[in-house]
Image (cartoon, rainbow, N blue to C red; front, side):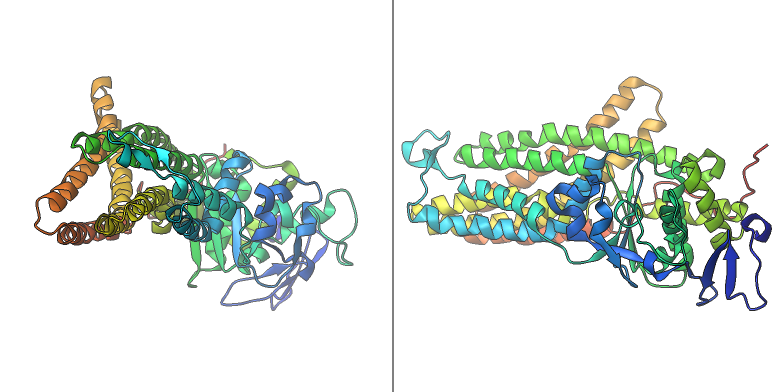
Amino acid sequence: AGSILGRSEDPEGEHVSTAGVSVDFTTSAGQVDWVTSQEFLRASFASSVLQCFGRSLWQADSFKYSFKSSSIDQYWSHSWAERSWKKLLLLLWLNNGTMAVIFSTFTALGVIPLYTLGFLPSLSGLAASAASAEVSIWCVAAGLLGLLLGMLLWRPGKMVFIDKVCLNEVPEVPEVPEGDGQLKQEGMRNIGACLKHSKSMLVLWDPSHAQQLQAIFELATFLKCHEGEKVHLDIRPTMLAPFLLVNLAGNVFIAVAQILVPFDHNWSIFLVAACFAPYFLACGCLLRSYFASIQGLKDQLGFFSIDDTVCLQCDRKILLECIHVWFGSIEDFERYVCIKVARVFSQRLGNFLCQYWMVIILSAPIFWAHLDMIAKAVVSEDYGTASLLAVTAFTWWLGILPAAYVLFIALMAKSQRRQLRRTSNALKLCWRAVPPCALVLLLLVAGMYQTFCIRYMNDAFLGICIFAGTMIIPCYLVWRASTKNTSMFTPRTNACDPVDRA
């Protein structure tokens, strides 16, 4: 490794000269911290990166949003081959989603007094009688507006590292000679130091990720330099961006259907349940593509070779130098990717794609629709119905719908594995239809059980409490079971021979 790097080591191993640049190594628990200058340890506020839908990422002078920092809250790793809108939308969900749903829900709650006091007009529904035909959709509208504003305007304060902002330019420092691209290259040489100083890492994964040398190097180096430490590593597929959009649009459609369709007929339950089918089918298509890409990832990592990766030639040379510093040799790096990195991907790209709070954001329109129905009941002075709707809203929003999401994802994963074993197109089509049909049936049964508890109990409020109590427990058990990630594939467990480059 020394001859490849063109370096000479002193007896204590604390100072190394690499490619004519003075490099300091600080030993800590047997590891090295490669920093050519403290100027290259940089970060940016997440709010600066995400403001105006990632405007800073499109600017040529995006480096002005970064600053020197000896500590980085989160390192953002991504593939340049993936479309930017997916990554930006996913970052907005992950960083602003919690505050956005809190703000939007309070906004929806604030509309209720305005409607009950007559400041907002009623709209026409589909009920037969004129009295019950007047409905409110103001809570849903206000909630959607609040969600959009919260996503775009909330400013998370954590410090992050992203290459587009923190590596494109580097301020002039005495240790680094000027030249075309020289400063950026020195920034690339210090990626390992930035990873070492990062408290956590977020990987925006897509099917091209394993083919990008820089992306794989970042993840492998983060795992290597934090071995034995308690650090947070989060891997999220960029497929979640369109998946979340489809689910949010579907829930808005169902919320409006809940408001406009009267629940004084038995067929209304079937109509609302049928509204789930179209977007379950759309989500199924996205999930099938995702699980198919996981199979490709298994092959890419199982026989990983640096020669098969994509990278700019100038960046490749620098990354190979870094690989020799951190891993000893290219062969050792490839073995580490085949075993350790593959195991991490397998564990974190399992069935459990959505965190609980993310599902709460997606199903928030259902809760807002119940707020509209509560407002209408208050206007009609039907406080008993309002109390029933309040219990129903929290039961579905916090219990049934999150459990339905994780069951749907688990069924899709099982269905995909079954399809791989089938050669008949008819059987494959049947397995594709199983998850959406099963979820629609499940939601239909839950709705019918709710109707039974309300209509056939002597006390309607006691009935809805029985419904809530009996549903929350199994929903909690389903969600808890889903938190145990199911490995998508079995990585290599022993040292593998390096790929033959002959």
